[in-house]
Length: 119
Image (tube, rainbow, N blue to C red; front, top):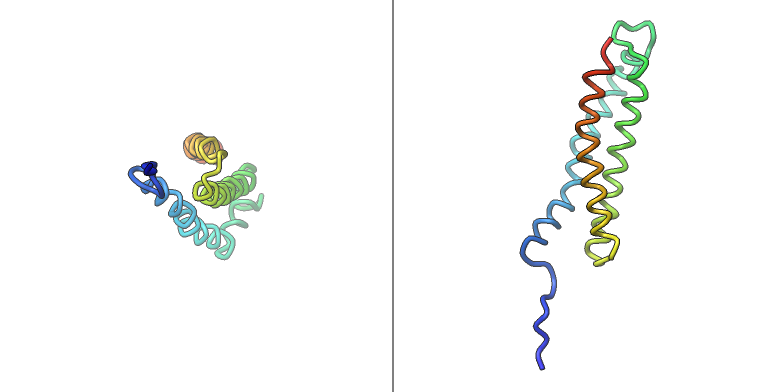
């Protein structure tokens, strides 16, 4: 009797694995320099100091919230990589949650930035 069940990754799962692995790398590559510049170049002070002409009271919570949300996505993706390769039962629900979270976060972030952080 031969075992004909598939082994390893194949088909569309390879694309899912590639996307999973590159997502946290891409996010860190994109956002780390942006956040570093925000603090190193003095933009944080410009946006969060009440006497600045660019000040708005929502800039600080907006920036902190964005950093926290993006950090959560990076950490969640790293967890999902391990869950995926360990064939954990939590992976499908976790993956769906992160995709839905991202689909809500991105437009919400853009909407908040354009509608609520301008003087």
